Image (cartoon, rainbow, N blue to C red; front, side, top):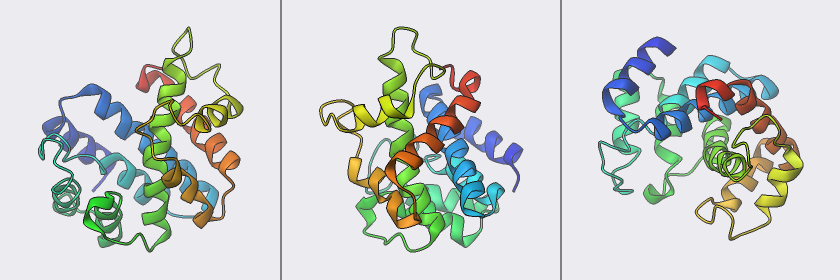
Length: 183
């Protein structure tokens, strides 16, 4: 599977453009993490890109979400490791995040939401002027983007990353694709 095939499958299965942008953001953060940690950028990026491919198909049913996504990813040619990471990023299944890939997707997924929310409250609604410091300030405000799981983001420590370093890495990755994210 290559990125083009993954994007075609996303076009077939995902109509919500905000969800597509979230998946693109997850891809960017996962690629940056792979580069930082010396892992396979293509595998990690595609895992981020495909991780929510089933959200609309499962109609938001968290008991079904990511099971179907893992199966769809495998049908596209994803590795077992990629499929497992997609499955375990949804805590509803009780599947443990064991590998670095699992742990990376688990913490990267909610980070994209926090960064997006932090950009959207800015007057210009852009990532360009956003700093890691301001995202970290928002991180500490539990009422801000309340649905974002801060503990999940903080699990970046299991990858050997400090929270500030992780937020900075994620923000820069998303800033690099700001035009695709329309932020």
